[in-house]
Each structure stands twice: as C-alpha cells, then as structure tokens.
Length: 440
Image 1: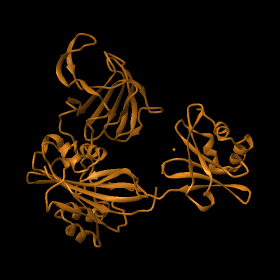
Image 2 (image 1 turned 135 degrees about the horizontal axis):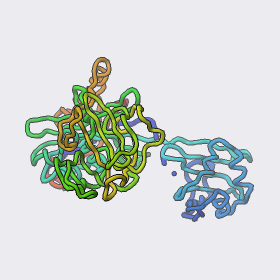
Image 3 (image 1 turned 180 degrees about the vertical axis):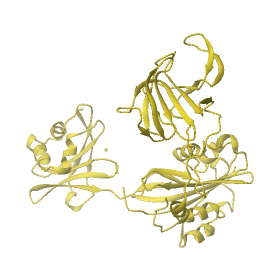
Image 4 (image 1 turned 30 degrees about the vertical axis):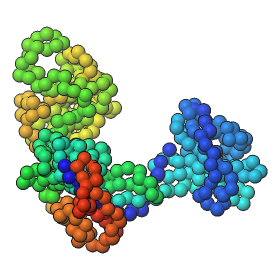
C-alpha cells in the first residue's frame, strides 16, 4: 500500500480551552515583562471547590478574591467553577495578588492584572492557525488501515464513513488499489497542534468511478455534504434515528413476539440502546400522533412527505413540549429510548411506511434529501471550485500550486507501505498557501 501526503497550509484569524483545590505546579512567568521574576501557583479545581478555597491555598486572604469578583463582568465566570478547571495565581513582593489566569473555554482566557495599585480584568482571545491538509493515497489491505497509515485522523475517517454511509459502505465497496484523497482542516495554537477540524472535501476512485463530496454551509448555519452537482449524500429519511448498540430484531413478515408469544408481523427494526438514549426524527415531518398505543407503549407517528410516515415506539419519554401538529426537522430530538409497551428490554422500534404499507427500514429504497437549486446551487458551485480542482489535480506539488496560486515548499515526507519510509524518489512535498479560508 502506498500513501502520499501533501499538507496545504492556511492561516486564519481565530481560537482556546477550561470541589477542593490542589496545587499542581509552580513555574516562572514568561508571558510579559511585568510578570518576570515571580512564581506562578497553579490550582486545580476538584469537586466541591470554591474560589475562596483556591485563594486560601495560594496564601491569599478573603479580601483578595472579593476584590476580584467586585470587578464584575468576566470575573463572574469564577463563581461557576468546574472540577478539573485550572486557576493560575501570582503574588507580588507585598503578598498581594498581582496576576490571575483562568481559561473560560476553548477560545478565551480571563486575565486579571494589578497595574498602578489596582486590579484590572479583561478577556484575552487566543489566536489559532488553521491549515488545510490534503492526504492522498492508495488502498492496501483495508481502507481504515490505509487512511491511518497516510495520517488521516480517526475523527476524519469516521466522518468520511458517516457522510458516505447513506449511499455506500466504504469498507465494503472499496478494494485494494482504489485511491482516496481527503482534504480537512487542522488547528494549531502557536506551534502546538490542537487536532483536526472539519472535513472539507474527499474523492474516492473506486474502479473507474470517482465519488466526490464537498462540505457546504447553508445560510441558516446547517452543514451539508454534497456532490459537485449539489445533490446530497444524505437521504431524505435516515435509517438510523438513534445511536443503537445492535439490531435486536429485524423487520420480519412473521415472527413469534417475545413479549406476548404470538405469531405476528414485525413491521419495523428493533434498535437496542440504553434507556434515555436520544431518539431523533428520521425526516422532516408533522406529528400525527403522540401518546400511548397498544403494544407500542409510548409512541410517536410522524407524517413525513410523498406518502412516507415513520413511527418511533417503546419510548421512555417525549421531547418537552412536543405535541400533535408540531413540525419537526430531520435530526431533531423527539424522545428517548425506553422499554414501554410489549417490550422485553430497552430499545427503539423504528418503522417506515409508504402509503400505509410497512417496509424494511434498513433495506427499502429511500428518497434523497432535497438538492440545491437556483441561486444557492450557483453559489455552491462557485465556492467549491478550488476544492474540486484540488481533489482532481495530479498528486504533486506543482499541480496543487497551479490551483492555489502562490506556494513555497515547507517540508517533505516520504511514506511507504503501512506508513513506513519509502524508497528514493517517493517523497512528496508539502505546500504552504495563503488563502481566505472560506471554503464552505
């Protein structure tokens, strides 16, 4: 198996991350000239911890933390501490609080500093560099192994499987010798890699067929994955309305009901999952019935579109406020897995009917999600233009440079079978590229 790696660099404005207290470490500050020469104390919050406890552990009195909270605004985040949070504190030569640092989340940090004898607080937003990385390779003994050997993160590989799954099972359709190209974002804070971002585009060459997918953000913020013609890989009706652990009983024209020991049709698929697991609408629709039904227990009937209806049975609970006549969107939470009605264990009974006739939810042909059209389709095609060129170009540095304009060689990596070093002439160059980053 051969894997060729190309990294496309892209810098964007942007991103950072958050009892009883434990002193974790003490270190010399280096962030600003005003902080040189003093020792930081880092306090880790445990369950039941309070701000006063953190200050006491650092040798600071009650007035110190009271003065911090009196600053108001962002310092109020210190009243909502969570186990595992870190608070960094530093005192001046007089034993007073001089600096405080508290990460409020992935994008910002609370900073409190003493200047001119008074404390001042502000939120510092951390910049993140985002790079686009293109990975291209040839499938060896397995797709998952080939993606991993080429350096594709597991989260991106899982996303690929999820995106393509409504149309094809990649692990079953792809054979040895087929090719892949995957474009995704990688986030960095300074020189530290934080992890992968979004999957932007991919192309699989399966035999003579080229199957491409591109990320597109709708005006309302929803993200969809579409082919180059604006058609969705997502089905209009999902086969998986719950994150189940196994299929405990399939669709059958006749079976012995395990709860009542009667031979009768099983008009749906039993999806085993723990009680309380969220159940989501398989498609856009209107609530036709919500309540209790014989055999089904707590159940929801949705009227979807074009003669399709879906049913969700044996529920533990309904979504708060959901009522007959309400419109729901695909993926919206409508209830939770339960064990009500004729049931021998927690699971969701999921049914799909077409013009009143039940069909096997896992195998019946299903309609595609609505494709883009008009101005939205034109906008999509314009936006993905550079991505189409990238996934279709020959895999070498000059090819990518011709698509993206300017370039300089950043580094090189030689990848051979199973990710091992390849022989002479097998290196591929990485390219750093200036770009707007608004790729979809």
